[in-house]
Image 1: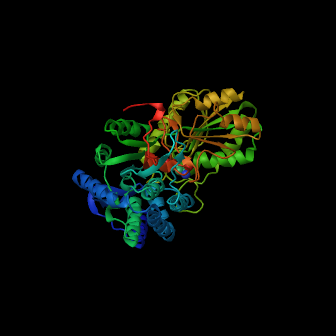
Image 2: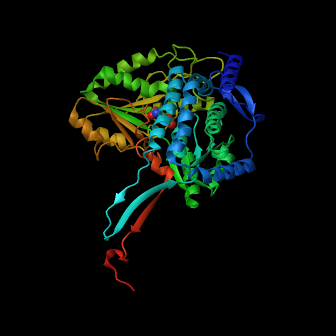
Image 3: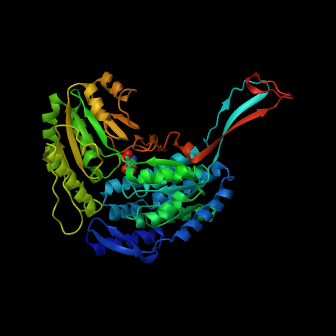
Length: 500
Ligand code: UN1
């Protein structure tokens, strides 16, 4: 598609959703498909951002006492609107991120899934009753809404990551302000408008959610505001290093989802055909631009040549190009800079003795940064392998013993996602055990990417430690109160203390 067609398609999707684009020249919606601008937009000023946080704080005051199941109704309606506009939103994701259609639809499905999870959760924000040591006393734990949640999201999952945070925050009784990536303003406008429609339809407070389009100065307003109780930020480790301490300095809470450098171990007993499919999706899918993308393959020496050959054969046939073309599996990288840093990483890997066994070249096309996903066989886990390059590079390393594989696996600063391909129960359990993978996500016979929303999502070490999405991740969006209730007529002190 050319830029005029992309612009028309974006306009049509936005119109069906009902969203309008605030005209301006502060930032530009663009498409990585052609590398050209689509619309000029107006950003919010710092004053407007501060006022929006104030408005959200007001909305929070009434929302926090709305019964949680009634809050769930808002999220249920949002989920319905997402179903109705699934195709429109997926189009905007493909236009602004360059994801292939199936993955863009998958991203919207992930949003619908988390809405449904959150609706159920709205009746399950359980506290505990705890045995008290004193007669006639009850000890309990109550979860209360936290305040305003500031969501800072990245370009690669421009809508789903917002929904993990927002669906939970809303049922937990919080208000949300959202600073999306500058690279995906149209997806943000559309998504935010769908929530505004759900808010209007259910009579929830109008300013419960505020979209703050802008650059890092807008992000700073969110990070610095004492009214933002939790900053949930997704992006690079560099971004997290800047955000984390600033929020901590004002005793705010942070939830960080930062870089990954995800690896899969392939053991000699692995089902190689299954492993092959898992590896290719995880490494080349989304053009290597997921935080869960498979970046390192740690293969047993006995099968390394065989697997490398099979992978190289599949890579040589990967259809690269326009993500709207049904045959395409690898769309463009988000920017030219992303392609430049991929090529620079490949140069460094080769200087370290790495051999490119598949791909790695820029695909010549007018407009857009299209690259061939690459596989590089490395003699060692050198510095470049230990860094996250947000592009489709798969480094292949080899091992002889599982101990060696696990040591290589864990010897990177990041700790998001991991997997092992094996038919050996002992190896699988060892990998999942306390001295196995040190990641927040550890899988068996499935790749590192494409997690379901039902589990908690996040990682250790430089990945930031936060957990979002399913399981009990909701607790990050609430504050806990411990209650001691004396229903006897005597005052007894804990720890047998006597006084007065
Ligand atoms: C991200 O790349 O920031 O597990 C999120 C996955 C998706 C989410 C990725 N469910 O790959």
